Structures are given as structure tokens and as C-alpha cells.
Length: 274
Image 1: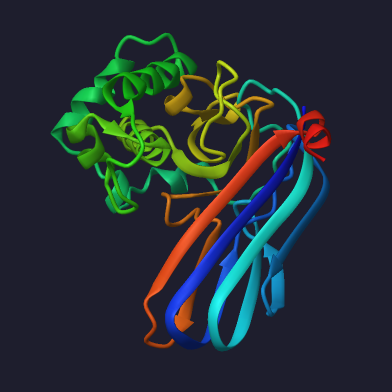
Image 2: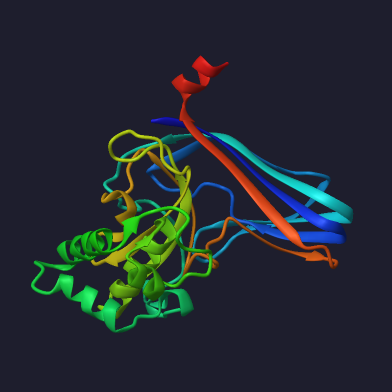
């Protein structure tokens, strides 16, 4: 599938700030499931610094903006050819050992309810079936409902509410997988549409679990599936903050607000719109 991305993040400051420094994980991953045809990241009045690929295989780029500045636009545009690999991250080069992702973080720390949920893997016929059972358990326990949780909501809190968004699903799955001794990590990226072909939040997140013999395999409880050709993978981390596509700091007292617009469509749809 050929997918095009138009992703704009707008930062506004109540008072002009002296400058802004950002770290971007906005370049699609390199693996057999996707091929970048063209990709461009621009920052309003931005100066691009160094760029490198980290141990997890993610491309990280530094940007800075010299103030005074009251508004910054970060725009991502590009086209990617994707293939369905049934969620398997085949051909992805990284040097970090999977066992590193057994370490929990605050958003993925288990409580009694999450430990109980992890029992869904009991009696599974191998790690692959166990991972599918855990993903299904999260999908059943946390209904997809935008607006009920916040950026800092933990997996335990989302499970307590019984509602959340893709970030909450990913955190919960990571938490119970790690509790079962299965390395797991958070993945950020884009999604064209849900399993029924309906429009979905284009900026998306899911989890990957390390399975012997297969390596990293993606699971998306929010859509009850493994990532396929509808997905574009950007980056990974221990949790949502660690894998955030944009991280940064502003020098100055002005309060920051952020607005995001993301559109993902097929090349045919783009041609119809032109």
C-alpha cells in the first residue's frame, strides 16, 4: 500500500521565548515492511543539527530555533510503500538487547488488577499465543474512548477506568507482557484506517513483544490486530514519553500550547483531492 502523510504540530507560546531545542523521531523505521519514497521534515525558522540512528534503530534528529519566537510549526510530509508482515519487524537493525525492555517505567508499572489481567496468558501454547491472548485481554478490558485519559495516565489508571486510547492500550499490554517475563516496548507511528476501513486517529501507537524465533512482533489492542500495511512505524521506547516523535524544551517563561493535525491517505485518495 502506498501511503502519504501530512503531519503538522503547532507550538504556541503565551509570551515570546528565547529559543527552542527539539529532538525528533519523525523518520520512518527501516525494515522490510516499509520503504520510504520521499520524506521531509521542516521547522519554522529552524536550524537542523546532528542526526544519528540510536541503538534501537530509530533515526533521531536535533533542531533548534533562535528566538524570540511565539509560534513554531513542525511539518512532516512524505510517501511510504508498506507491506503486511503480520506484525513481524523483519529486517530491522538494532543493537539493544531485547532483555532491556523488561524494565518497567511509571506508566507501565503493574498493580494487582494488571497482574490479574496477565493471567490471560495462562495455558497458552507458546509465546506467540500468549502474546495474542494478552493483547485480546487488554482490548476487552479497556474500551477505546478518546478524551477520557491524559498524556500522563498510567496503564493501571486506564485499566481502572476501563476506557482509554491507543496509548493506554499499549501501556497496559507492555505492563502485563513484562510481568510475564516477555520483553515489550512502545511504538509510535501512523495508521491509515482501522480494521473495518473506517477513519481512525492517524497518529497512532501500539506495542511490540519479543518472541523467540520471530523477534519483535507488533500488537495493537486498540484495533484488535497486528500492524499490517495500514501502519507506518516511526520509533520505539520504554513508554509513550520515551518514544515520543517530538521532545523539546523552550527557554523562557511563556506557557506552551500544542495543536496537532495528522492526515494519512492512500496515493489514490491524494490524487482525488488534488
